[in-house]
Image 1 (tube, one colour):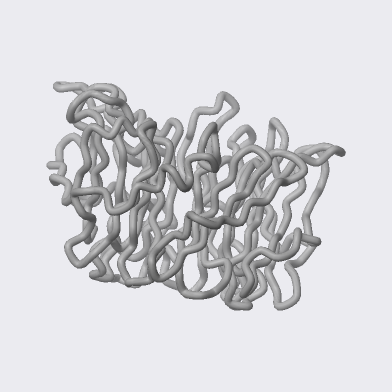
Image 2 (tube, rainbow, N blue to C red):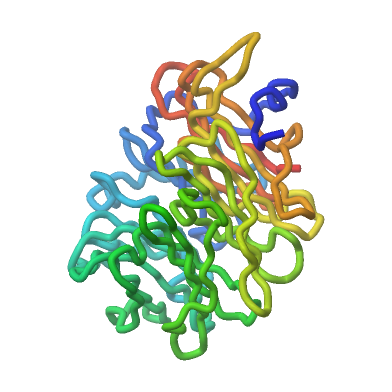
Amino acid sequence: MLLLSTASLALATVPPSDWNHANVQSGADALVAGDFDGDGYDDLIVHSVTGIDLYEGSANGLPAPVSRDLTSGLQQYWSGYPEVPLTLDVDGDGYDDLLLSRSQEFTLVYGGPAGLVTTWVHQVVLPSPVYQVATGDLNGDGYDDIVFSLDNAAGGRIVYWWPGSAMGLVQFPAFSWSGGQVFGTADLAVFDANGDGYDDVAIGGGGYATREVKVYRGGPVAPSSQAFATLQTTQAYRYLGEHLAAVGDLDGDGYEDLVSTVSDAYNGVYGFAVMRGGSAGMSAPVVTPGVDTQDPLIHWIGDTDGDGDDELLVGIPYYDSPAPNPVSNRGVVAVLKLQANNRFTQPSVGDYAMGNTNDNQFGSAIAAGDFDGTGQPDFVGTSPYPGGAASRIDAFYDVP
């Protein structure tokens, strides 16, 4: 049976959400989770057409009222069409920071005991527009770094490594990767593929017939300039690397793994590919074919069931429910578990949630964290369009 078969999901009951915020007219711009005040509970930032709101996590989960209105402090940096913001700890102080990127700008908002400090931000103007961004600790110094791609005048893109420090971002990156006309033209991800304590970089790119993911090792001084793995699907016109996610250790072997969407030449998504990390390198992609997977989001969520294996969170906003009560573009957010054959299995009851009306497009934005501090992962999804119950954000705590 194809992954996310409409028939199989239609037979199960969708649980009610543990928290929701209705009538936000969110536009599905972004949901961002992080512990910005270091209290042990993840917080949720919601960007909508009406502003930027922060909900602080607690032992009771997310609150009903907005905890902080960040609009006046951040709207000028978070307007237009920015990349989805990321959380990181660039200065190693134990508080999550917020990285905003749009056009030719980075804006770094530092966390602290009182949460995000919006009265002073670190803004950087870059020589050309930013395309993709990822974060992680490539040199193992305890400070999160930024990896990002810019246009290359010679063709393709240049991917830069910008290391963090106790002072934050202090020097424009001197290290970069490049490789021709189609290099770096897809997504980026950062993860520790070989378990050596240094995060590695996955760079997607390629031409019309074949697209691939190259993986470069991190190290104590600087990342490697030579790829230690080049990953491709076995079929032509099955594109790897358009959407990449560092998803933790899916199979519990101690090495972090990588997931990519697999699309075809007509930009339809064919399924999801798992590339397992290991001491000697990366395994070849194993593809789980799926249905109704147009424009998916893929995201880390952690180990939801306590078996030692991490899971994958996906958002499919154009998911349709089948007859006898068809609902088009209902949308679904699901937690997918990896089987022994390196393919994902159908989500079980409690592992997914769906929109409740036509064109809800639930899952247009997703996030994961631990909002109630139980140690069990939670997930959040949004239905983007205004109109009563059709416009809301839903959180599901302690996913089984």
